[in-house]
Length: 175
Ligand code: 5GP
Ligand code: MG
Image 1 (cartoon, rainbow, N blue to C red):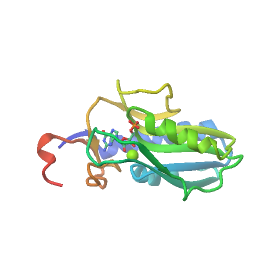
Image 2 (image 1 turned 45 degrees about the horizontal axis):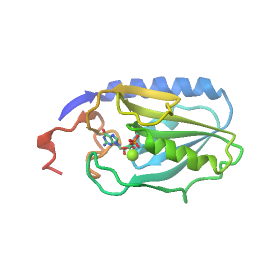
Image 3 (image 1 turned 180 degrees about the horizontal axis):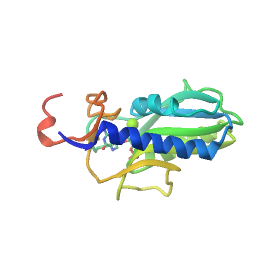
């Protein structure tokens, strides 16, 4: 595997995002909604850098079928979401690829009548977007490669890598 972002680079990028988020919300109460499962590592690091009054919730978004690029319809499970009516909400996800996931999740979230909805992603894959939406906070822009680590998986493996790596052909057999 080829390392794309080291632990140190990730730490710096997340800290910069946290600073922008803090400046945006000042000391207003915020609800962060992490999109499972890819955002768990980012969420754990991010929330500890934020000092405003903070609530944390999760929802799950997944597409049918497991493999790398082929995607089925999106399934959103919002049963674990906290009450967000009238609240400032920040959606947190691992990666913005086509953008379809975040766009659909945002539409779902708006049904619960939050005061505001913004979004933050660790990674933004360049040249892949299929929707108008642009995340409000972006950690890193990366080239169009399949990446794993820091929460991102290949068939549910590799999420625990502390760095971000590009998955290569020979890694595909070893999960
Ligand atoms: P989108 O809906 O923006 O096309 O895709 C977002 C979701 O696709 C991410 O939350 C992630 O689960 C998955 N995804 C997109 N690109 C990658 C990638 O390079 N690596 C991994 N592990 N997942 C990806
Ligand atoms: Mg994901």
